[in-house]
Length: 103
Length: 104
Length: 281
Image 1 (cartoon, rainbow over the protein chains, first blue to last red):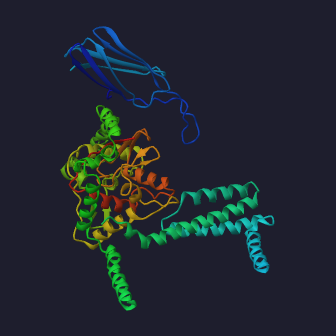
Image 2: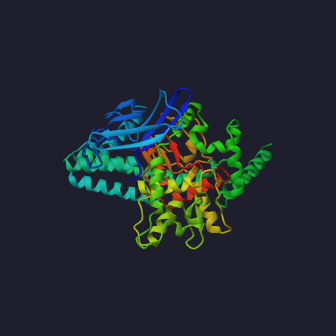
Image 3: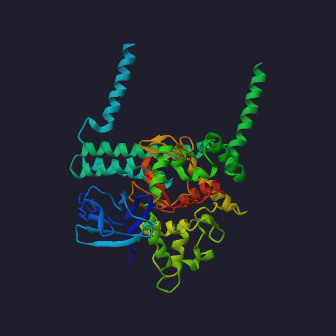
């Protein structure tokens, strides 16, 4: 199955800029469907970005984050060719992860 | 002068009376008013120009009738009929007026 | 003096008649020039190809936000879904590619087309459903996600290609074009707006919190991923919501009126690049 995670990491000097787009419904649990029933909460709770065995960025998400979330950040370190691992877990225990090369 | 004012007053008052608010409306009154409104809306549908306000008012009229509030229901049905007629008039007018808006 | 005035009035009245009567027999080439000149004269600083970017060609702040989003467009997943759908064969083994020129890749800019056999305007969405039905599949709802994903993928394969709409030498095609033009300029709904009220009179201005797009090239970005919708929406969906937003009851998706107005607007945009699938607020 296709990965839910798109990631692009670009190293420049001693900093790496990371952008990531994650495919997820991010249902808050507050929205009703067309029949008036609450759509149960289904959202990512934790996203972790790992480089060289260390977690360089953690996202703690909840109902306030919208569908197909996009995140952009920079971290010190990382160079072209290094691996960057991205993984997420949601409130239903589902998860996905991917490894991308820093450009 | 007083006579003319009196006549005008009488005309205005009778117009209000004719609108059916002076006496309690019945279920039959509603059926008649609603049928007229539906017919007018059919006319708007024929020129593909129904308004959402008309549809909403028709629904409200039906809901009021279902709740036994026939005075309100009749007023709403008459309002829906007026809206439907306005939307039909808009379509007929626009058939002649649209060319004036074309960029040239 | 009175006689001279009467004659002058009579001449003017006589002269006014042809202008109105001419609208029932359009001259698409003349329309095209007038339409294009209107927008390029009103917005001299906008590059011709930029009009297809809708509100972003009108508002610098919005453009900056769009450029930032476009680094990782939200429609990425939808286009992927569309690609997958497009490649998946029907139950009878045939594919969408079998119904189109060039296997359906890079053809979006040729739609809508006038179909001489049926005398109807065929949009891309209609062509896709015709393909489905010809191969024993149920048609998709014109306003929902499946059609949006398919057309998003096909638009994506045509990115940058110039809009290429033909009006064949057929009075029925000219009539469809004229009906589309009529639909565009006709006021409707309780708010009494026409498409032109917003997209010809007020591009770049605000309607509530939105910046209005110019009508020139407005179809080139379709289908569009709208943040408001949280998803990709078809041409039908957009036209239907425009209708209801001015207080008019929308028509069924891909009704003749909708197809005709898409035909008109697409012809007006001939030569401008396909920018779809678009991202919009």
